[in-house]
Image (cartoon, rainbow, N blue to C red; front, top):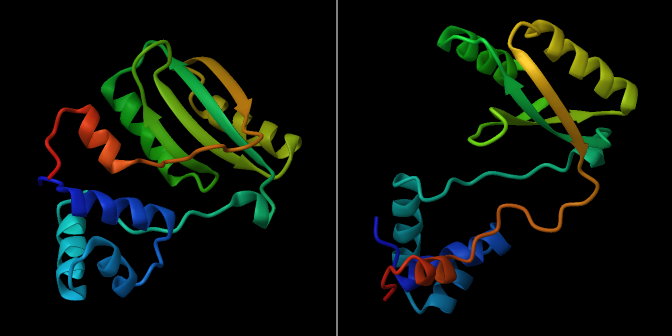
Length: 163
């Protein structure tokens, strides 16, 4: 789907305030409410974005948000599938990325405290000790920017002609 300037502006506005009214969005992009609604629905249908809320784990007792880098060894595709399935089903693993480079996976775990983190880490590492070769944890102390995209600037930088 081609993103024109109005779609880029709509996406930028929704990122700043996803509860902004269609009327307010329509005014800022100089479209009717119906046209604005159709654009938003079309972008959702084309998987340009999906609406969701972002929870803040520290506000409900999970003070440790931990980024874990994992390197694997001697694994089969079946091992990888089991590992991913285990992580997806684990309530305290909130993000899972298979990555390139020095690490094979990057996951985010939420824990109540250091002892809780130790228990969670041991649980995962023990369950997959035959394939996990390295494990590095880093505690997120503050998020300065998270999943924020300036669609107009991205379109300019990719050489796309945003009209």
